[in-house]
Amino acid sequence: MTLNKSLLKQKLSPRDIRFYESVDSTNDIALDWLREGALSGAVVIADEQRRGRGRMGRIWYTPPGVALAVSVVLKPPPNAVGQITMLGAVAVAQMCESLGIAGVGIKWPNDVQINGRKVCGILPEAAWDGDRLTGVVLGIGVNVRVDFQDDVLRQMATNIETEYGQSINRTDLLVKLLSQIDCWSASLGTADLLEAWRKRLVTLGLVVVVREVQGDSVEGLAETVDEQGALCVRLADGTLKRFLAGDVTLR
Ligand code: BTN
Image (cartoon, rainbow, N blue to C red; front, side, top):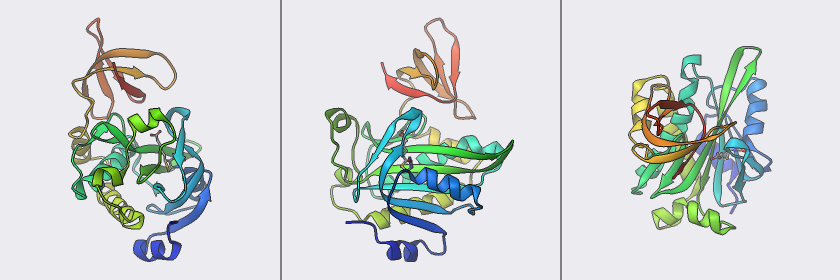
């Protein structure tokens, strides 16, 4: 069943929302809205995305009626932009935890996993006016009851309903998610948010391969994260290499 627009407006009031049954990407719409003057907290929601975008140029699959595809407009202070991705991951992790789901963790930098399977992806995108930051769109995709089409996805991904063990109302889930985002938005730029993210990371202490956004893959021990959220990896030659972005796989 599709999300109900008037129920969404009622439950999310007084927030500015734009709801679509089907769009290419909620992030694209939110970025346009941000450039036109959307206020912080404005939200774009779609029941289906035809060209949902993932990190590192990947496609994000959002068939109708089975997921959450949400983009939230935020106007963080410039020194807190790097924490937007943490904010998204912590908000989704807490949404899952509040349902009593066990085994929730964050794979660096921002994939929320349940028992090692990805349940949510996050794509923050900034809009600039020259060298002035207009704001950031925090794009969040949550699998609720997606029928994954290929074996690789079936192995690597999971759904909220699978882990929760019963059906769940997507509007209620969205209300929980946005309230977590509001709550953590007030902590942007603080050590509290960094710590809430760091303590959920499942990547630390593991031997990983990090693929840089444009570049090579590097293998090493994921030792720690620094204050900017960069992953610090100990290489075989003993040096510590810092990654601000990239993709991690276990060796
Ligand atoms: C990832 O690759 O893990 C990030 C996926 C982000 C998907 C969300 S769904 C809502 C928003 N709109 C998009 O096109 N992408 C993000």
